[in-house]
Length: 286
Ligand code: NAD
Image (cartoon, rainbow, N blue to C red):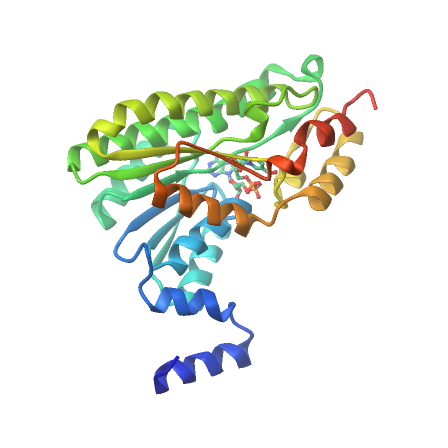
């Protein structure tokens, strides 16, 4: 805006039905995260996608990592196209220790030590405790807890060694605080992520590295349709409930950027989403 090039770009954006002009304007201006490298896991969808776009819109180079490489690439390409910001789509399974080690090594050698890492990838299994299989437990803990442990170990160590500070954001959930009859493994994994974040925050403060745990209530993403249900009847209520009661993922992303900016420890988001009430409605006994 204000320059001929800016006006042409705005015009092209308008004609092509591009991104909200505010998003593009901020990215062009450099933004609060200009010159920073941000890694977001689970960036192919939902909160991760919105977070990668939000950091890019504030000037950061972003690595969009996801187990679904097509989704990761789509998001990175969208950022590069819409915001003219460098973005990389990379495949990783956060639950796999070897995969995460290769991933972190490649990121660091190709793009440098990230300034900000958002451990966001997560999955949900919904159903009563007595209906959860051992495999339901293993997969939930592998992705939601081990995925965060791997991200914190590998990137935390690299940030500490570099000695220039940084920030780690772990996406937990309000489920970490609200006992649920339908998300026992999920809630347990998220409570662990919240505690891990607290422990890590105390230790990494000495290295100038901040750690935040983001705890959203319902957010309107694909998580309910991606989830595993121990009973098919749970699916429809969960998908509908999430769509009706959820925050837009962009609002969660804004909280994540603010948490990094202000170095906030614990950030509840959409706490008024009354997660307990909503979850009781999709109880298997209902
Ligand atoms: P989503 O299903 O839309 O996105 C999750 C992304 O993670 C997907 O792109 C998926 O491919 C990716 N992923 C899954 N397993 C992976 C793995 N092993 N390795 C790498 N990537 C993997 O869900 P979302 O709602 O955006 O969830 C993001 C995070 O937010 C999760 O940790 C979730 O638990 C948390 N959360 C979501 C809500 C909500 O209501 N949507 C509420 C609180 C917390």
